[in-house]
Image (cartoon, rainbow, N blue to C red; front, side, top):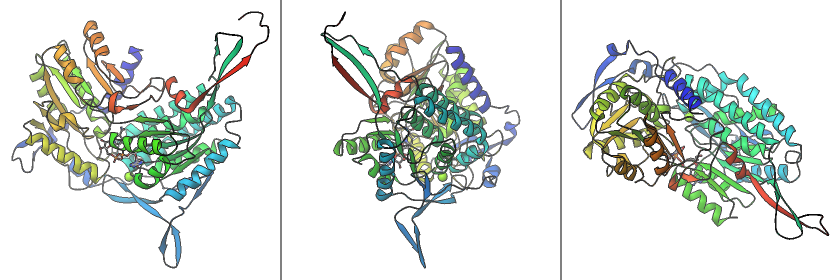
Amino acid sequence: MLDKSRMAARRISSLLSRSLASSSSLLTKGRISGVGRVVPSYSTSSSVNNPITPSVKVNCTQLLINGKFVDSASATYISPNPIGKTFPTYDPRTGDVIAHVSEGDAEDIDRAVSAARKAFDEGPWPRMTAYERAKVLFRFADLLDKHTEELSTLETWDNGKPYEQSAKIELPMISRVIRYYAGWADKVHGLTVPADGPHHVQTINEPIGVAGQIIPWNFPLLMFAWKVGPALACGCTIVLKSAEQTPLSALFAAKLLHEAGLPPGVLNVISGFGSTAGAALSSHMEVDKLAFTGSSDTGKIVLAAAAKSNLKPVTLELGGKSPFIVCKDADVDKAVELAHFALFFNQGQCCCAGSRTYVHESVYDEFIEKAKARALKRRVGDPFKAGTEQGPQIDSTQFKKILRYIRSGVESGATLVAGGERLGNKGYYIRPTVFANVKEDMLIAQDEIFGPVQSILKFKDLDELVRRANQTRYGLAAGVFTNDLETANTLTRALRVGTVWINCYDVFDASIPFGGYKMSGQGREKGVHCLSNYLQVKAVVTKLKNPAWM
Ligand code: NAI
Ligand code: MG
């Protein structure tokens, strides 16, 4: 398992850290505005100021309800005819509009839930054999593979993540997740229970019903797969709300699912905003289960909405402030590379980003120098350009928020050793930023920054480290870098987090359960554990007359 994980991590790391031999000639001086300090930074502003034109057409922009693409119920009046209301989705490389997509609101959620309800209560999906359902999912996975280029292009265009990451890392993970759950569809068993008394007791796992699913923008298609894969395998029907920043790939993928044979009404996709469509979905009385991925603040809102409406069970995959721990025996070069990957992957927009880098004092100074050098070498640029490691942040809100955190780091006394400002003058690019001498009481060590900002802290001994690493409201993941088995075992058990990666990071095999302790969430996604989110357990007790044995 460890070998497999290491190989996967190495594959991802090597893809993201191509030969950077020529980069030193591109080193320029960048200024940190308002701070007056000069920090050297790797610049590719020429590439970010001349965006490459993507080669796909955006075809799916309407709401998907009951197997049909339809306009939203609310109308925008463009004289002389009313048309369904739309909102723009933007290209984070430029801030320009990519397309206008139909904007779902409460009435559209109602229409979608009615379709999903009917498909569950009367339709073929929960009634067909699990093997038939699996075949639809397998066909869908084949179509995802076939359309990798279009899907990856839409994903990169809408989100800003490197195209190579979309096409070579994420799309294969996405079809893998779908195949993984296709494989589970016909292996969901109940139990025969040895109860006291003359009773035959069995449990039946039934699909929970209509699932409401709300996904974020950082991994739009991957989150789509994590949500729809297990729900469909279990025989549920779905209303999925995509994130307003990234509506395009979910619509295209849902179209492929219908081509694969999904009956109408089983998966309905609504593009729209959180406070309207999202709120309507989480408080809907006819939705039987809610799955949410996003911020902890919004997690609280949807949990309360679920409680106040029909008490639907909720699974939450929320934020994090995950420690990445470099122990004293670490090979510093390798530790620097992995810590860099753990934080900067996906522009730092990962719920499980290793955003508190704890380094043992004996290797701290060397680590800082090398972490700085690595950040300065990071290739930031147009995500469609081959070799780009980092694209723009998702939108202007996140971009400004990250720059505010950087200012707060400087003002609170952390040492800025790399980056610290925007790159270019178009879109939402931020230079890879590294802070040394970070302390736990600083905001940058407490809050989820969700950007390319590495905060490095020093530690002395393991007991102190465990106390500090656990001193957070979050508990999503942790990375441990050590060759010492005892240290690894101690930390594995002491850290209050849902995933511990030892000598690897961000290994997201479909079979590995993922989720958080504390305010990082409730429940688990992926793996066998996720199936129970979409199942009801029914106990069937039959009285026995004169049983031959009990
Ligand atoms: P968010 O949590 O508000 O958005 C995530 C999803 O929830 C989106 O689909 C959004 O439309 C929906 N939503 C928002 N308000 C809602 C409501 N009242 N009812 C129902 N659904 C609602 O996150 P946002 O604003 O996009 O990003 C803010 C911060 O959240 C980020 O800076 C980051 O720290 C964190 N975040 C964490 C993610 C993760 O993977 N755990 C993913 C995205 C953001
Ligand atoms: Mg967009």
